[in-house]
Image (cartoon, rainbow, N blue to C red):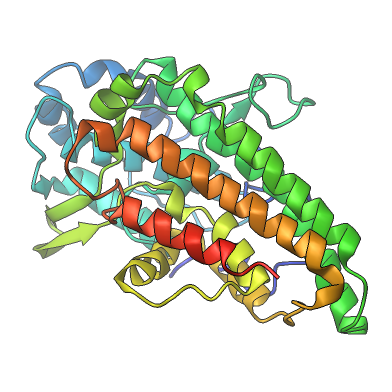
Length: 372
């Protein structure tokens, strides 16, 4: 049965105002001493080195991955997420090992544990944005901010800091989202009491927070080389195409790879701002991305979508400021997509399997068109 610890009406929970879409406590960086899953920590630490060896797949096929046996509870959830990170990285490393042709079969010793943990978490069996970013960070100073300079990754595909930086930029952006969700929660309460309430102060909070996220996204080139990104670690987060999960399902399957489109921030803002994106194959792709989000995040987006539409003239300036900030984020995102992906390939598909350039342009145009 999928996990149900946090499903339901979540928006007003203090965790979202404090952590955004990040876990309510810092992710577990290693399993407890004596845990049957502790061997996964050593395998995870060795993974970037193992992937230099053309014999990695033979090594991986011989691994014993302990089956998840513990009951699901608030106490064991951090371990379950770490288990998902370790196994998810292993599976994507096996299928998309750099220097080798993509594999078309995931061996049973990897496929079984991945399918099991994904089922418990209520999501498809592939490493997605939650495992690559949301559950994959730690703080150097526990009393310091969840921000660049005070965070590092737990698991990687390569030894280069470029991959760490790529992940950690997303982690800080997710941490800033706490301010956005806090403001939305306040607005929801005010609208419930008075549909004509003055929401300006909270809307400015959201606009300022999104602009802070834009500033963080602009920092990508500081420690991430475009050549290294495309050739060394981007292949590992690519989608699975016609992959058979040995011993689990005989039919080849397709799953979307890790992508920022699986973050819940923009879908929440779109739902909050009531932006009417034109229905196309691209928006269908976007809707499918929600299946790769944690179940509690999907519930939150639905709750925000059900809020009253407050798009009226008295909040024109801060309302437009949010849209301008969202458009700025999309422009920077598009620029990095051009710099880090498009210039190196003719393949129009991103790691999630979507035609990203067309999709990003459509989202940008329709966001700007929604201004009051």
